[in-house]
Image (cartoon, rainbow, N blue to C red; front, side, top):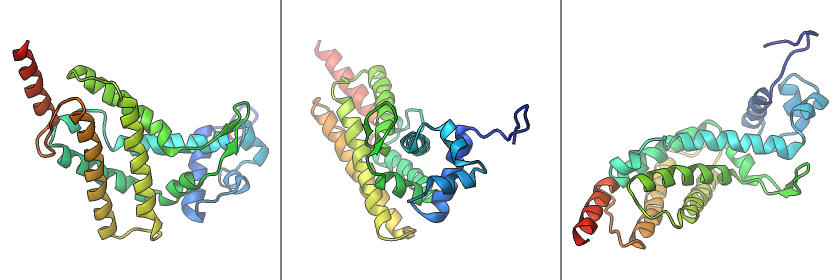
Length: 230
């Protein structure tokens, strides 16, 4: 670990988040700031020099976990180029694998109370907020490339992520470590529910998609048909 010119060990915000996740993994979803500082091998005052308050640290943990969860979807057009049901099943299988690496962290974020954040009033910690913004950005770039009407994508993105967060909470609620059977059921139910939301969004635009046909192919046919009508 790097040291400052005075010989003090340098501890970054990332180091403290790493330490917090280790504490939560080991001790459960109700860590103390003392335990986190001890795990990071710093004093509590030094921890608060990196993070303004508990809300600041919790928000950073939520951002870290949402980035990791969202990475399962990739940054490409997989959902567009593969049959939706196949693509969603793959995405949720990878997502479930990532959640099972840190189930207590998800539980911790889901159970986090409303906390006071310095200079920002009351903040309700929300695991899905950051992920929804990321999903909307990706969906908008794909929709504009197709092209597809983007009106309502912000609501769709929040609905998709909100449903997934709620389903994940249910999946993790029955045991400390869900069985393979429970995980398989979660993947299948998440796949069908999320596809239902996407399908509903497309149908409101007059597009009838098939879960076993790539969306890109469906949209290409729709665009070709609309061009022929012009």
